[in-house]
Amino acid sequence: MLIGDGRPWTKLHHISGTEFLNYEGGKFSKSRNLGVFGTQAQKTGIPASVWRYYLVANRPESGDSMFSWGDFITANNSVLLKNFGNFVNRILKFAVAKYQSTLPPTTDSPGPLPLSTEDEDYAFLADVNKLLAQYNTQMDAVRLRDGLQTIMQLSARGNLYLQSAGLNNALLAEKPERCAIVVSRAINLVWLLSAMVSPFMPSVETNICEQLNAPKRSVPDAITTGEEGTANAGAGFGIDLLEGHVIGKPDYLFVQIPESKAEEWRQEFGSTATAAIAATAAGPSAGGKDGKGKAKATKKEKVVAPSGNAEGEGSSSTRPAKPKKETKKKQKGQAESGEATPAEPAEVKKAEAEVRKDTMESTSEIPVPSAASYAQGSVEP
Image (cartoon, rainbow, N blue to C red):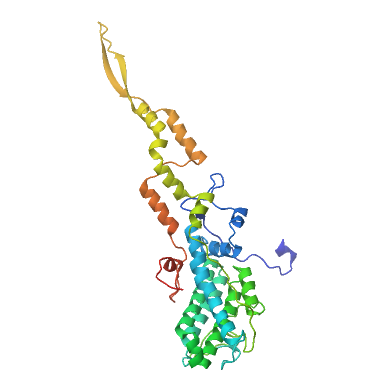
């Protein structure tokens, strides 16, 4: 119809397909009360942004993925709170406390920053532009999970920048010019992150822009570098919030979720692993009737068959009786009704291991902490 109309309508040019999202070692099932659906997610009190982040970060783009309450809490506490939220809150609070909420003057010119090896922040600027180019490529290819991961890698690079630059009172007192450059570049990176995160968590973008006292912006084109390492005009990361700009009041973007909530939500919304463990623990008592039935089904019967001789003497023989159909029907009924059947310990351990699997590991050449590294305590925010 659109083609026959003759006018230049925008037509479908790309389809993004996915595999299956499973739940806690099993599958989502409303009939078996396994999984969290619709308004149930709202009743947990968790902001929509956290749900949006976790579901996209765990999006089954190249294969099946698993929803896990443990990973859900780790994603919020370790990735969103300690990585992304920490970077934004840390630099804005410093600017408010030390610069009276005003961006300090620096030697940086407005617009894209040139990539010069003489710049003390050359490694930082090169990484930012590399991740920006990576993000644009991923989003153009509708690789949403990878694009979101790149945003978290970029915020982790921002945290590393503040740490390596030594942003503190001593830097402000001993090297005020250097301190001003670090603050200006970090705050401009926060503004860039707000635009990049917009497709995934629009309310977070709004919150950041309110704290920056800045309008919403667009994501710039990726930088391209020549032999001299100079940026193309208008491309790449640069200084867009200028000196004298007054920022708003800093606030936390995310709040911590107690780890104890994982078990509470498993009980409320069901868990395959929990059901299997409970069924294993209740195996002997629950299987009493089945055990008796099986014993009856396998019991040998004594059958007398005529020998066919003249004196009418008979000879006895034994043969196993056929299993009772009731037992098979009962097992089939349990499977259809979704009742848990006793599971082997090895199967339970395998299910629990699958639940704990971290699906948000970094695939970038730039080393960036993952959810698992935070959970193991090997990385400090």
